[in-house]
Image (cartoon, rainbow, N blue to C red):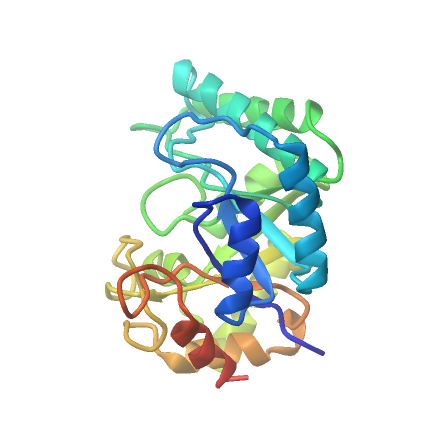
Length: 277
């Protein structure tokens, strides 16, 4: 079975160009922003480009494509930011459905100080409303946090998944974020314990995608700065364990590394991972 291994690539020049970029660096799955992440830019669809995008990803065998939501998103915000976050994600998941994109990987945001019942309920209500207003074939994928934001712990993600109670809510696990948050998966035994705990709380079937990123910072630093594969503090052995684990072989793996030339995820990072399979 071919392992799905890809990268986050730029959408400069459009979605179709992103497909060509991932193919050129040797990836067979793709993550990209739906629109510029620098502001509240809502997706504008071009029907001709949409057809080209779908045809090209089929031709090049890019089977799994994900959006990554803007970093401005904060679904626990009770004001303007929360409202814009909701509108942005509704548009993004509508677009995902139209383009046969699996869904959007989302950092949920922050409680901005103390977590209260009101803020938590705002978060849950926003997620439920987004799901109610979007096509049922697009997934809402919660990414674990490596800093002190929402989703830092598996227990908190499990609570959110349970309270939203919708099969479209899935999880993205980021190696750098796990490591930064104090989850040790650096040996066979420790990885198996983590996967068992995750399965008990959320279910391994609810992992939609893994982010493979090394870390610039030490274990349990609560900083989520990504590093190129093998040059950070996590080490190659952890990536070898993940890529070869029997329970994870059907799950796509995506890199978000800075790149050895500083221009983002590259062929060299993917080649290093391929060498571990």
